[in-house]
Image (cartoon, rainbow, N blue to C red):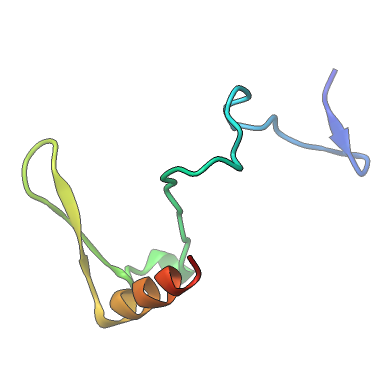
Amino acid sequence: MAELFNNKYRIASTRLQSWDYANEGMYFVTICTKNQECYFGEIVVETQCIASLQSTKIGKIAGTEWFKTV
């Protein structure tokens, strides 16, 4: 039977049930932008297994502000 919330269907959580997300750790954050524009930077592939973010000016500002929240 489908799970309902506020009388609407919803998908099951993709979170790992055995992990306490209150723990310290590294997390990936995905930010969706209008028209999928790359406002924050471009991914630069260095080798098959190594990539990095080449930040734009906006990306550098966002990174600075993000780390102020820690």
